Amino acid sequence: MKNHKLFSVGRYDLDEDLYFEPTTHLWVSRQADGRVQCGFDPLGAETSGDIVAVSFEAVGSVVGRGASLGHLEAAKFVGPVLAPVSGKIVAHNDVVLANPTEINRAPLERWLVELEPIDLEAELERLIHGREQVVSWFAAEIERFESKGMVAE
Amino acid sequence: MAGIPDPKPTLRVLDAGTVSALRSQCLWHGIASAMSPGDAPVLSFCRPAEPYVSIGFHRAIEEIDRKACRRLGLPILRRQIGGGPVYIDRDQLFFQITVPVDSAPARVDRLYRDYLSPAVRAFRRLGVDARLRGSNDIAVGNRRLSGTGAGRIGDAVTVVGNVIFRFEHRVMIEILALPSEAMRRECCRLMRTHVSTLGAEGADRTTFARAREELTRAYGEALGSVVQTESATEAEERAIAGWEETLSTSSWLWGPRSGRWFGPRGGRQVKICAGVWVFAAHRGDLGVQMSVVDGRLERVWIHGAELNGEAERLGGALEGALAEPAAVEKRLAPFCETGRRLAELVAPGLTLH
Image (cartoon, rainbow over the protein chains, first blue to last red):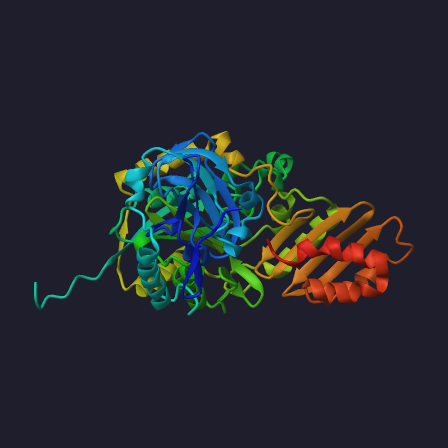
């Protein structure tokens, strides 16, 4: 079982090992075999609403950073899940396909897809990583979301 | 330049009029695809020339009775927004408000509140006591008046709705694949009670033109914009044509999740409107069908070969119960093992999926 290095910002738990995409609120986790997994951070999951369905591009598809990895649905809204890094999709998480509400319940534990990255080192530089940087960014995001009424205060 | 106020923003209004079934879906997919950051919002309208069935992006095609659709001559089109299968015909005016993603709220309930409130205002000006019910139903009391949905397509977010002048409840039910005629009858009963129309709500003299006019006025006011009636641009026409190709393919129609039943496991659930649904399930010799209306089990039918005349008592015990596992278990506790099995069977249908 993975040893999470968790810390909190406000009422949200985050993981020190993760890299965060600042606009789409997705996280990227480096795996020992060179692949990466990605999922929603707690703000991304919360603002999505109660997720009732999720679908992904086929295994083997190659997606660029910012392109659609798939779609999720909440309250009859369908939106794309935008790839935080580019790569080839090598696996879907069957747990979230079968129980999409798991994304809302445990966003850091529920990866969506696994990618074989194409240009990882360069693209990770565009993500936010390290406790100090993440705390600063995430606290500002909480404030921004609260000021717009996008999350409960 | 100092002293000269910024010009008021523009709301482009595109009225496509009466169009083919395919174009009535692709119009707003294309408008959204062609939208870039900073573009003016677009309010679009259309009516389908012929009836058809539309199914939400993630729903299984198996939810639709395709034989019935063939018999009735109804094409099926999958849309890139959510929700279940719906029957659509020329007695419905579609409206869509499409805005750049950066100017839309990121939170779904806020998106609906901001972009459906003008439609509610328009309904009220048409003389109907409409309100937002749940996150995204436009309703009069507990009767749905407009089906809505939303999605992000490209760099735009679109919120769609319809103004239903008349509705063929019977056809809507006929196109659904359901496990029994009893469920079909119950869905039909609830749909007649909870899915309404402008005509049924006393606004039967409203014309399509008047509805368009009030929607345009309400969205113009809400966005603080100058309304500008236009035709689709070349880029929008190209995008609409591209979507017409996509929506015509069988792979698109099949959808990303076909074969994966949407909704509770071990049962069939049909949503009628916010807070109202029918659920049916069976396991072994025990079966249940129940209607949930505003948080309570309104009607319950139980069947089972070995219930020894208890089916009616079991159903009666559940009717009126809160649609919550604890309330159901309490009502069924006197029925021992049968009650426990029934509580398990009912549980997935207590929430709307």
